Amino acid sequence: MKLFDTHTHFDVPEFDHDREKIAYEAKQKGIEGLILIGFLQSRFDDLLRVHQQINSLKNAPQSYLAPGLHPLYIEQHTSQHLKDLELFLQQNECIAIGEIGLDTFLKEHKQPHIFERQVHFFEAQLELAKTHQKPVLLHIRKAHAQALHILKKHEGGGIAHAFSGGVQEAKAFVNLGFKLGVTGQITNPNAKKLHDAVQAVGISHLVIETDCPDMTPLCCSERRNTPANLPYVLQALSHLFNLPEQTLATQLWENTQHALHLRTP
Image (cartoon, rainbow, N blue to C red; front, side, top):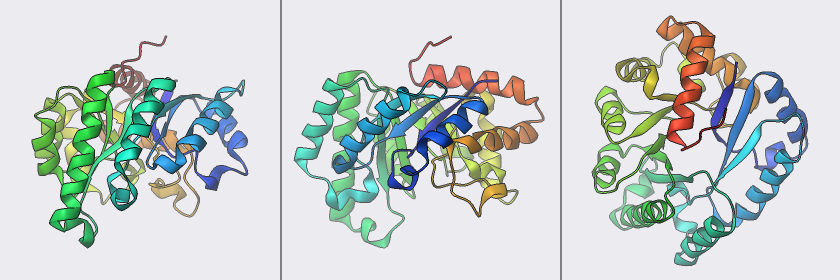
C-alpha cells in the first residue's frame, strides 16, 4: 500500500533532532513520497537542505519541493522575496508552488490594505505557477469566495490544502481542477462539515496530507504530528466511505499523481 503525504512542514526545527528516525518510520508505514512546503523566503535554504537530506537516505520517502509565500506571514513578504521565489524555481526542481492563498482568520488580516497585499502576492504567485507550469498548493482560510473569484481568472489546478469549506466550496474547487487535501481533522467525528464536503465530491477528488507538525489526528492529539501518522487519515476516510483501505489508497495515489503532474510507477 503506497501513500503520499501531499503537505508537510517536515523541514521545521521541531524535527531537527529526530528527522531521520521519523522518515524511516514513515517509509515503514507505506509513505513513499512527501512534499516539503515553503512559507517564508527566509526558510528556503533550510527547505532545500532538508529536501537533500531526506533524499540522501536509503529507506525514507522521496522528498519533493514546493516553495511559496504564505498569506499568514504577509507582513514579512517583500517584492524581493517574489524574485527570490522565482530564482528558487529556476535553480531547483520543484513539484509545485505553495503554500499560497488568502487568510482572514486573524482580525488584522481583514483590514483592506492588508488583505489587498495578500491578494497581490497570491496573484503574483499564480502567475509564477503559470509561467513555470506548476500546480499550486492553496492555503485558504475564511476567504473561500474571494479565492475562488481570483482562481477563476487563472488556468491551472493543484491542491486545496487542509480544505475547510462546505459542500458548495468543495464542488467549486473541484470544478476549477483542484483536489481537496484531507488532514487529520477527518478523524474527528464532530467535523461534520468536512465529512459532508468530502463525501459530496467523492474519492476521485481527494488527496491526503498530515500538515505536520500541525493537524494531528485525534488519536495522537497529545503528540507532535509526523508523516508517519498519514495512515490514520486513510483509515478515517476508509470508514467514512465504507471502502477497503487498499482500494482507497490506490485511488488517492492516482489522484496525487494527477494533481502534481507526476507519473511515477
